[in-house]
Image (cartoon, rainbow, N blue to C red; front, side, top):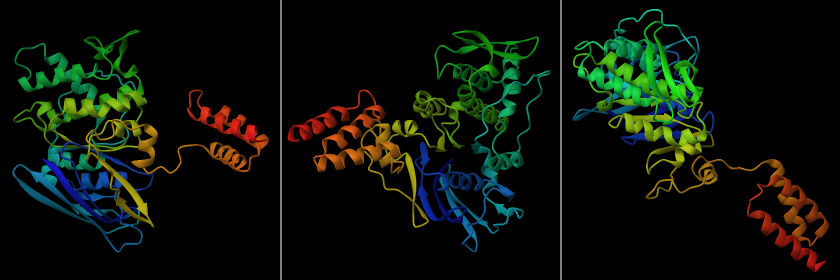
Length: 390
């Protein structure tokens, strides 16, 4: 199952917008408040039912609506949703393609976790259709991960207790500890306390003691594997064969720029048949994107639209972070006000052959610029030329 397109009218800050999706991975970017999360939630709500307070109609619209075109098996289906209310106390009633909600996973921004004791290993949660379409709106429960992992690990010691698919998924989860950093690996589960232990360069630690970035990534990977097993029991499926839709809000959350550049490739590696739709503010994530994977939103006189990007053979892999910020993400300024002030003073003094004013501005720029910035030499040449003419 894949989302082919969605058309939004009068929802949140979006007046009218139509977006076609890449069948593998999509990165939604743009300024704060432009509608990135609204777009993501419209996709999620296309697979839900009952009522919602998450989406509201645009303040200037009489009603809001969105239509998603979904590819299911060999055919297509449409989800037509109307959002009537703007009042925060009045929910809107929706009726989407809830019968297919089991193949949509939504991960919200709350993805890190604190230590929680597991006094007993519980049985699997029963994830029926009702639970699936509620989680389309509310997001999957990452707090279920520890019980699921410990359950599978302990039962894997008993022949015949787990299916072949469950054993494969457990091994996939174990390997996930090393995907971001090969110096980390799964160690064991302590039988006396049900604690998950991890090998690290500094010794063995509880898995809750990993960094917030590590835990954010594990919440995504483990959360998906866990929900695949809880939703698909008869028959069970291998997690790497899941061919549904995965929504992730703020993919870069808690991640160092180095990991931001890796996370998308890791997710595609673990779930090669899934379609990912994510929001991001990270130029490092976009730097690793292939052509037609970026959905860059912008606004003109209050109207949100998708920017037409110049795709190349290698996407944006050869672009600098600054080039992506300006030409892809639409950021107008990448320097500080002080930089522009001193640079303006310098250029004005050069034009007026005013050596002393230019020298003063140059001294300030020397404090501002990176030690290896090529502008230093250029500015020195210009300054020397004005001094020679004085």
